[in-house]
Length: 429
Image (tube, rainbow, N blue to C red):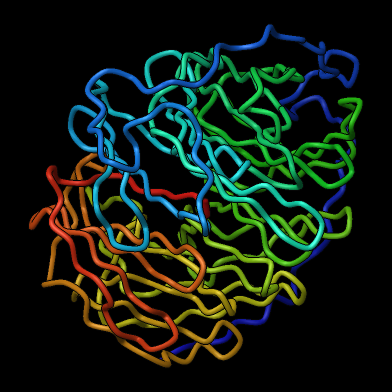
């Protein structure tokens, strides 16, 4: 069942006037303005030690191919592995110690690995170059490059509006760069330092501005929007526990412990949860819909809540709809399909396909066996990643990877993996 909750109290929230008891979470506009850092060019990309070579990937020199070669990059305990997204064959492995996190760099070729004290650039080894009405396709050996973006406690890397923003949780520093030239060397990075370090996120905007979270090491409170020069335009601090971000058609959202904030048309709107504590800390959006998919948790004191409802938030109307799935899921279960459909990988082992406008569950696709979310968020669990018309589902317990055709609703390929996968992302090639 699903429930639609109107939000009569939603209001556009500009920056309120200063009061003596109001805590500031950003410095004055002058101190927010970035120093433009021009960094030196990196070395040519190369594979790191331990790369598994195949006939296709044996040469470091790029080879032209007849078609695009989409690829998947996965972490495992002790390294990274890259698979051909068409047949799921693992074509490269690379040792890398530590708990590593993955984010697309934004250029369709590279992946950013959050590890240690930096975001390190990983070359997935496939890309396409457009020439007029056609494109040329290239392949090379996947592997870590020497290129790094220094960051104390590297957190989220977010690509939006053609730019990529790196958030350093340890300092509150945000670095923004154009990823288009990553293959040619390290790009210039525009740095902005927020007033307080916190676990946060930054989203580049179409006009050259930046949406940033507000918070301290103890708490997170909301968001602010800066123009291209770093001047603050609007803020909202009515968002306890601010977490996550997603872009919808014409909007950016971030989650709160009691609702969600929508930034649209220069204004910030708060949509309240129907419960006093209704956390929507993880979201999935798409340019094909104004509706954002979010998780929904209501037990503040749970060691690990296993929710069975999801939230659909229409960013154009500020209306919230809750949908009961009849099964739980994890924060790595959310995705969007090629037509804007909402996708949730349930602990029942099925991929639930939801109409974002009505909340109707239109299809349930069995993929894996029933599973239980581990208590520690860093531990592997089945994870959903969507690329083009295919949903990829990892099964770490069985060391398998499944490809699901979202048009037919069937599993097209299942592959055995050499390691239990944890995080997964991909490139279109």
